[in-house]
Length: 242
Ligand SMILES: Nc1ncnc2c1ncn2[C@@H]1O[C@H](COP(=O)(O)OP(=O)(O)OP(=O)(O)O)[C@@H](O)[C@H]1O
Image (cartoon, rainbow, N blue to C red):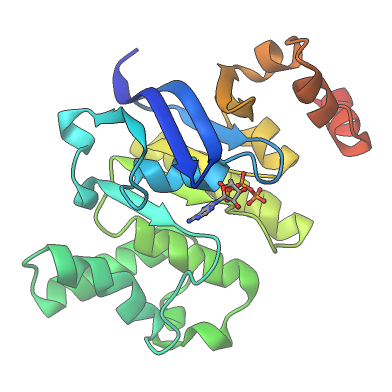
């Protein structure tokens, strides 16, 4: 498989608190990788470091040429996803205006395509974020992340705050987009449903490193933190249904 992102010997540290200590992780083109781990284990810091928003203490993160520039990335953050003062149309067109020389008409047409891709009607374009449901906000944020036709999509807790039905619909949407667009998806998630239904591989933050594998491989790993993470009632119920 073709490697898209190679993280080598990564160390992140704040003051004397070491978060990652020689972390290695390869991310392959076309996969959906779920990043999991307990609260405070360093998932967000890892994502932010990949995005260049956090400078590591040491180590390297290499992107393959085709995914090296910001324009190649679609990013959906958990909070503050949309600009509240801009309409849905302007939110989605924001990256197009920033990074491309497309005409306003072309931006508008592309915005409508992105809206349709995330399953929203044209009429939503004129609305403002405050007028949308939580699930619609997530879809608009996803449409904006897809605006520039990214090579890789970074999602931070994409289903947090959604009711179970909306979360499942959103998982299905991610799966469909991944298959149709051949996207590489890197998502931080606490949502075991998402993890089990959407991710090809799991990177679990343990002891300042990641343990990586398919769901089956991770479940077979005897590390006590992994066993504890997947031994809760919900995880067991999901595994029975898997
Ligand atoms: N800018 C910062 N300055 C100092 N400490 C930080 C900074 N960013 C993160 N940390 C610390 O790094 C640790 C890991 O944080 P991070 O947000 O990555 O955890 P997480 O795994 O995403 O947790 P959660 O699931 O609760 O969101 C925490 O102890 C946090 O307090």
